[in-house]
Image (cartoon, rainbow, N blue to C red; front, side, top):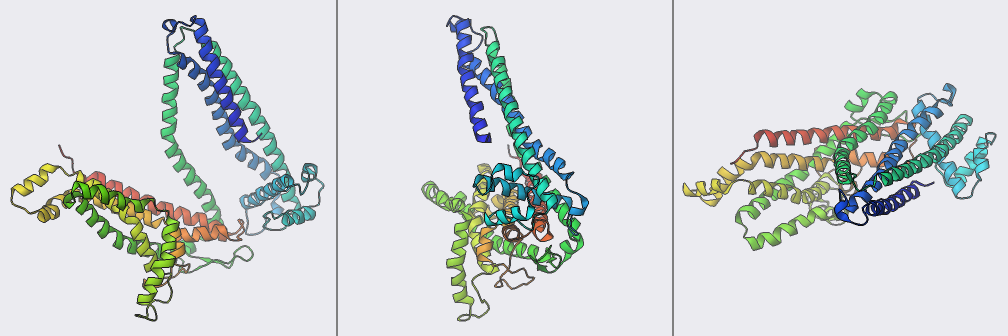
Length: 490
């Protein structure tokens, strides 16, 4: 049964349980609310909670544990002789999963029936041909061990889904029966529901932490797999980025230095644009603009933050790039050959970051107490002197934190770079040269015809892990500066 249908069935049981639990409590009190310990809705909510929470908890745990168990079971079916030189068991398992997915799609499309897909004596050459004819992704010739493992993978997944459905429905029905039996007038339904809601709030607050942990683990395992196939020193200190999609990518040069240079160079240009404009806009809006001007200008400025980055990318490609070529190209200064360059992406990315810097800086400047302004004016300082010598120094830690957060946002940008900066991985100081960044290469490495048993595809995870560490470091430094140097006003 599809997971969506299972969720709907559990929710339906919860609704029915709510009605029955509420009705049983009212019936026990002879429809006199004063005889009930809690409001009738709490009795119904207690039943619904006992239906939904255990059922969904079992479903989530099952969905997380089943892939691990199935992979471990299937891994034992793959002999060492089926693992090619330069590959690993984990990469072979990736091929097994792709073959199993191809079989599922082929059965769903009517290319083959279920009996043929599960037939242990089926010819693997025939199945490879059928999958390719059906448009399914097959990275290489399916071998006999991979086919057998893929068939077992499908069987174990199908059995696991069936057992999960039974377990979830039994838990939902048992929870409904338990909750309905508890629905008596003297039952403290409100206390139980409030404790349950408190537990749900704690679980919701933990999702951010668990998500971060999940992201890290998903990157770490594939990064380790990459460094088993490609030397870490060559990756971190290599000066050439030249992936080769032939074979297992053994002739590729995957040095990250050119990508990091392009990332930091474009981000630097973006910050040169965004920081002065954003900071000046924040000073104007907080210190000089009247209420009417501020009420109009601030929302208009922050509209920039809601524009999708792909639109900024198109703006860079169609407008900013040709404009720069007309000024600095062959007909002008002659130092810019094409519209895709560091300067193009940096300018547009800086425009995108202006509302980010201005909004944070505006909030920080407004947090400076009015008494400091009044004291400065009382000593005879002008408005500009007050801004320069009182307000900005007091707000400086927060402004620095806002700039660092904007820098981490710039480092993680993708679409503007893809459309505005080009795809060349090079070390150059010329801002009118085309360059690329780590994020752009992550996209390109995972959208080509790369084989996931090759370092050319796995390098995307190593790039992602490096980028994650860099942006995390920037965020930590920003938070440290803000907290350490933040002024405390009474």
